[in-house]
Image 1 (cartoon, rainbow, N blue to C red):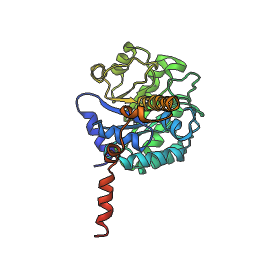
Image 2 (cartoon, rainbow, N blue to C red; image 1 turned 30 degrees about the horizontal axis):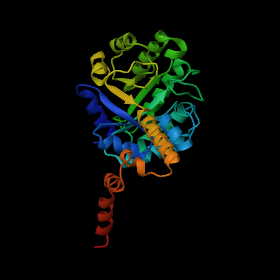
Image 3 (cartoon, helix red, strand yellow; image 1 turned 135 degrees about the vertical axis):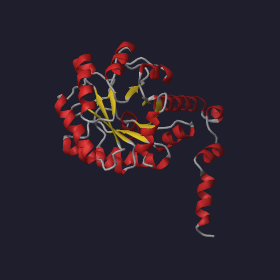
Image 4 (cartoon, rainbow, N blue to C red; image 1 turned 30 degrees about the vertical axis):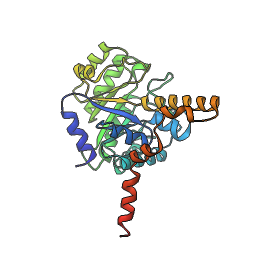
Length: 287
């Protein structure tokens, strides 16, 4: 069964599919080990991890595809990946969609921002005309070979043109054939309820700490009518805080001895990363 088919089956079940954000293969493996059913490859986190730069359209198509391949290879659960604005016009979207599907992803997320794009909760965004995004969705549908490879259409128009324009776009993107609608940054529970009442395809919620959308539990999201929830930045924010605290302690004390209760030790990490299993596999080829 393809990754897209697995995700589609998940979306048919009760409740919300929760997909924490991964920015590399190891963070994706930790998400899987924690028991989550899906990974969301975050462009925001990949940009920070790979480039040390903000999510403002600096990361390239090839860098994102390379990271996607590594993440997909590291886990046995579906991976959904941020595809930004498709890295150009409809023909670029064709190439991007094909490359994302070939990487083994379950879905690609495409947004209606101009180039260069911005993180969805940042200020200063601009969006392309609605008909141009509809063309990109049609291009993505044309490009996929597996009909279960899912197309997630995201509109960023709420912050630019207001709620009504964003709703019109979301409906148009659903009508164009998008499998999941990602209405970015609704600003209240009331707006989220209206979106769920008027859109009849699965809806994605973006849970960003101190973002524009209320932070709700998975049960609250399900009660409203959302089916898919991403937590794109939480892991990289937590990792950043932990590393900062470790470096501060090391600099202050001149040793890591006082930090032992804050770290995963050498044997534990080796077990988590499956060192013995890989050694046994290696030995099996020479026996």
